Structures are given as C-alpha cells and as structure tokens.
Length: 197
Image (cartoon, rainbow, N blue to C red):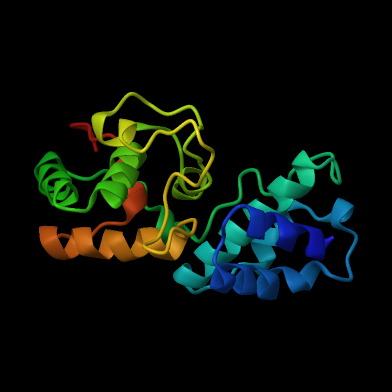
C-alpha cells in the first residue's frame, strides 16, 4: 500500500525530501490494519513539537485522504485532526496588526503572496491550500488568477517546481513576521476581529 502511495506522490511532483519524510512518518502504520485507525489514534501520535506535529498532520491527511479516494477505507480518520492548540491560536489579529501583516504579505513574491491572501480570504487550511492544483476551482482574486492554468500542476511550488510543503509556507510566514515586526501564527489570519474579542 505504501509503495502505491509513494508512486502517487511522485506523480504529484512531491520532492524526494518530502516523500522520504512522509514515508518515515507513515511507517508506523506498516503492520496495522488501516481500516481500524481512528482519529484518536492519530492524535496520540502527534509530537509535542509544533513543527513536527504539523508535518505529521500533513502526512496523515495526504495518506488517509488518498486511501479514502482509492476506496481502501470507508471513512477518513484525519477529518478534524488538528495539531496542538498553540499552533491553532484562535485569538484574532487586531486591525492595526492585520494591516501591517497584509502590507508585509504584499512584499512577497507572487506565489507565497497568493498563498497567504487565499489563506486569509477562504475557509481552506494551509494543508488544503498546498494540495490545490492549477486547474482546481479558485477564488477570483487578482494575485491568484495569475496562477490559474488549464494544465494540471501543483498550484503552489518551490523554486525547483516541486509541490510546496508546510515547511515552505512556514518559511514565508517567518518572512512576513520579520517584515511586519509582529508575532502571530498563520492560522490567525483566518479569524475575524470583533470589538468583543
């Protein structure tokens, strides 16, 4: 099963490093019946290190999403899987800081700029955004429109034209924080500010 998944990742244009990382994470399921894996089992496997947990989450979602689409499992156990709470801080960004952050995002190259604008304006998570292709249904946002293509390819890619990973997104988010001088997680872009916050 894992060999078939590796072939799928290669077809998707994932880098060798990403594939090697995913395989290392997914080996834990090698001797288990994947049909019996539940959400709580995956939550127990998540590392206390936020960066590691985020990579594990991406690997789990990719693998079990593929298994579900291929019909190997009836239900996808990664639905609702979140990394530790600190990474999913739901405190909204103040209007003043939001303006500073969006100004910093405007200074980024086209692709990471489009990524964060989509993160802010849609209901998609970073992992879901990274799984999009150029022929996927996309919102009508100017900086995103330029990435659209009838030819199927990863929407967000690295400089080597490989599908971008969470590490890629986190790299550019650190750039945003450096330019803006504030400290937030990228997930906080999604939460609207209200006077009662």
